[in-house]
Image (cartoon, rainbow, N blue to C red; front, side, top):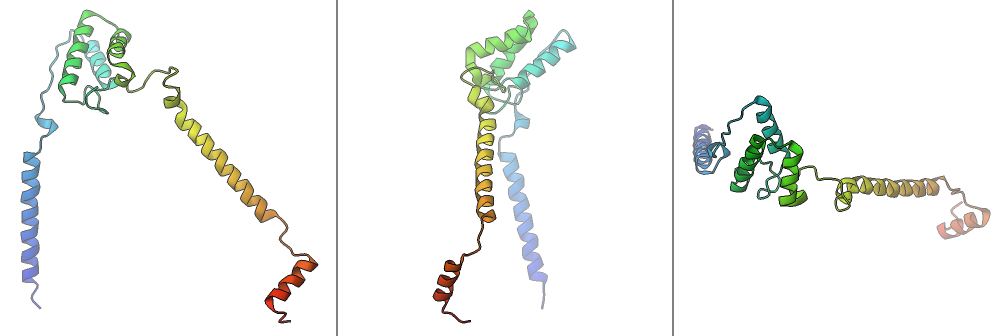
Length: 168
């Protein structure tokens, strides 16, 4: 049997698939083509503060992306605002407070512990404890059933023999 047509079909398929992947990667928008913000800082410490704040604050438009990882226009404006406040000499806590007042808890990747966020912070632990109590109850009930005396008394044995048809 000649396997040459199979190899030609496979080679053709791989070539077409490679071309499709290459064209798809060229046509899809990519973060590598996004605009890069260039901010000038007086000190290395200011630049590090900017990076830290940009990583700690969430983009209000992009849901789960930090300001430093977002290419959205809102994120760009907020990065510019952070740069301006750092250059004015504001502290990190003042900048975070400004962003919090403007955008609420959503802007913070780690929301503050308040009455409104208690369930957010402790909800997983609460659900874990409830699940553990339920599992413990099921385990105790199963152990209680398996540990109970399963031997039959004389009348139960007679009834069983009667149902089985006394083959002894």
